Image 1 (cartoon, rainbow, N blue to C red):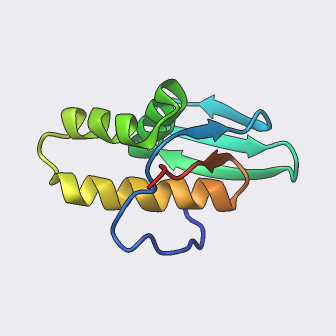
Image 2 (cartoon, one colour):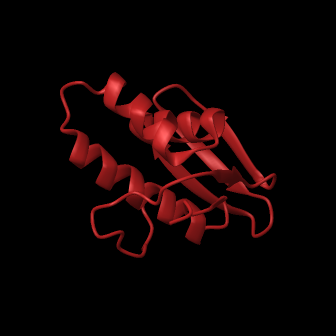
Image 3 (cartoon, rainbow, N blue to C red):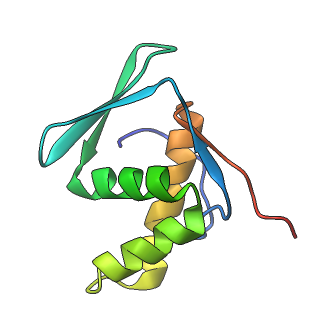
Length: 105
């Protein structure tokens, strides 16, 4: 996704999340488009974004999606994946495509 976002200070938001029922994904192989039917805006994803989206949707939990990313991208540092996933989640949240629920302290 290419959109302005809040910084996550290198940490992914943690805990449960909910994918918006108004987010529709059209997968076209190495690219995908998510449509927010509330505002009719499209958001493009590359293959890594598709993977992140899929894991977030399937797991419903940022930490579990991160674990899947770490397992899948064994050539990428876990801290880098955590930061990238954090930025992705914040961008999706800002776009109204998901809501994350921070873990209880």
